[in-house]
Length: 384
Image (cartoon, rainbow, N blue to C red; front, side, top):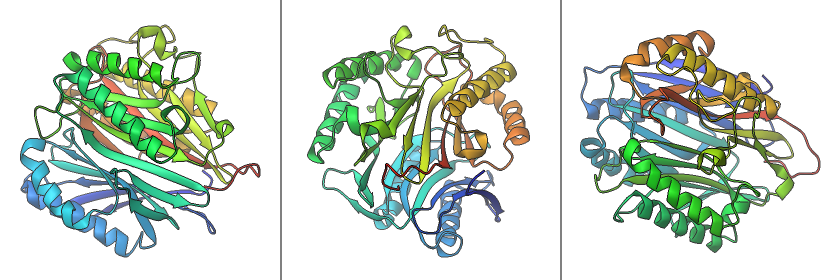
């Protein structure tokens, strides 16, 4: 498990899971999942419990760490986001993502935070959050949205704006973007527009089946404003050599996404002088022909999904022991009890959150994504 440690903390109204990747003379990384645990208290009380827990961690357990990205999962964004944003206006310390994807433990809010030590951070004028260490600049983007006429136009505008944000920093979508997330209101109806716009914009940016795509999750999720059909989070890195970025295929288990008309990579790993970071895209129960495997069977779909993710990780010379966080998306809330029991048995200590979010194809009952890190010394590259 290299430098990895996992911890769990309980308080009166929260459960906190922490993954630590600690190094002595470099950047340590932490993934934290904070869950509200008492569904009987109000949203504001749950929110305050999570924020209080976060600040206690920053004062004690993670006092040397800097937050670089946060995502709040809400049960009812229309009635909850304003309260959260009002609090964040006074305490904005990193890139921020807010999405309606109800936590499946029956509460109203959960929080994932990614933190690092020994980095310099600032908000750029174009809204991206810059994280600097050594010769690298990492750019995190959260909650990008617009109110164009439909999901296709919204996605096209989101991507074109993001391309310009990167160009301002001397970067390109094809060369520097490592990861995207698309949250799509009524995904069964609106995902087709996202796919069309992404495919067409990517061609203009030299992202094709003959070059490469970008690791991504496209999943059900809502903004507080019902006119917002698509919102986007992003992660890019400046300072990498092309050979530091590798794409994962797991061709024994998965097919290239372009074979069924979409454009994303199954996973990406990035090698630095001191570590390898792995980003696994949203992955479901699919085979190498692009077919849904085990329709209607949540247990078998979960097992096949794990097998697919494990195969991708293995291609990056990693295992589930290197995974720092998991987000698990369920189409049917009635499957939560079964799935949580399966995860608790196999991954009892890995920080994870279960949310209600339909996958982009109705036959898929479950999808997961994850981020991992392992020691990987390579003197050709600058450390992270």
